[in-house]
Amino acid sequence: MRELMEEKREVRALDPDVHDLILAICREGGSFVKCQVAIGISHGTWQKWQEKYEEFKEVVEEGRRLSQVWWEDKGQAHMFEKGFNAPAYAFMLANRFPEQYTQRHQVDLKTDVNVTLLDEVRKRNAALREQHEHQYDRLRLVARQGNVIEGQVVGAEEDDGSGAEHG
Image (cartoon, rainbow, N blue to C red; front, side, top):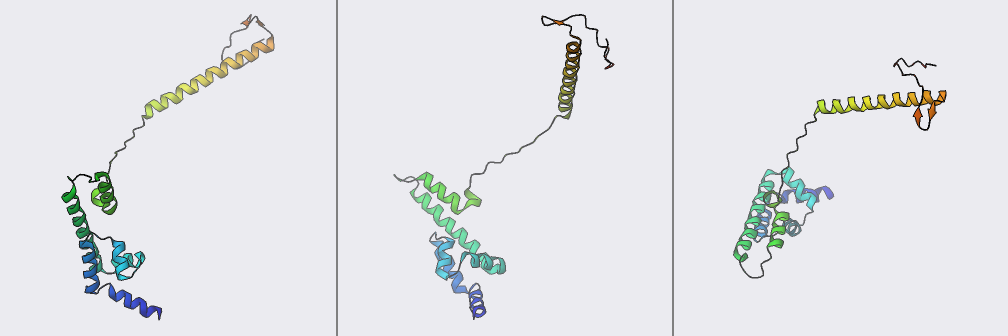
């Protein structure tokens, strides 16, 4: 029984009377939801019919154009009247017909990482780390030898860089 009902519904996708009803609703600025309710189908069925039946898809596209023309005509006819709500009208157009009326901002993002600069920063960081480690090693050596008087290193031998402790 359910399959029979589905077949009947599917046949309606190709019914010229259904097509005429969709176009009539859209000629008056009606939405696709209004069309779906009028022909008694869900949004899912509406989408499925467009995918499955090229003729239905063409009717829907024509309906979209007819509805858009109706709304554009209304805007043009009342645009200069007192009380015309231009922001609301623009919002409605952008939401009903986003392909034509959504404000798009194209952003081209290009990133160039200067590898030379990055390498230089890494080298300097490594050199500073090495320098600090060298100073820390000298302080440890001096502290072990007890040659610090009033914050000054006294009599410490210069480190020759060999890593060997002198003493």
